[in-house]
Length: 186
Ligand SMILES: [Zn+2]
Image (cartoon, rainbow, N blue to C red):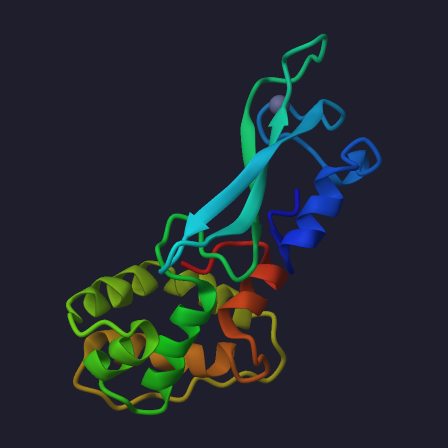
């Protein structure tokens, strides 16, 4: 099942015609494809007062005569990073700044506007846990070459050679990754 979409309208159009899209749906739990119903919008509160529409839920319905399993699934816009306060664009800004040799605290400040930058190391540690996923994407690219990166940080030494390859042919960074891989970047 496709979990990431280019924008909210694409998700909305999809969920308003779930019966029509049956062959693109399969419940990961009960394997049914014809019991889904649209189940509400996912909002995210960013700075300021406006809540943005970041996705929708669909429900493998077990109500009103339907015979699904009752599980709910989330469909996300690709600039959203699920379970994470910041979006794909913030993450990509952070990584791009590091690739441009900016130091870790500056890169975090640039990406988030925050002056408290301890979280930057949490981001790096989280990215490390995903490193094998990023590398598995590169495995299928022709002629990719990992160039070592000099840095005092063990995180950057590991991450940046992979990121430099991963983003070499893609301008929208984490957004494209989520859309192409159908997998959360973070
Ligand atoms: Zn189900």
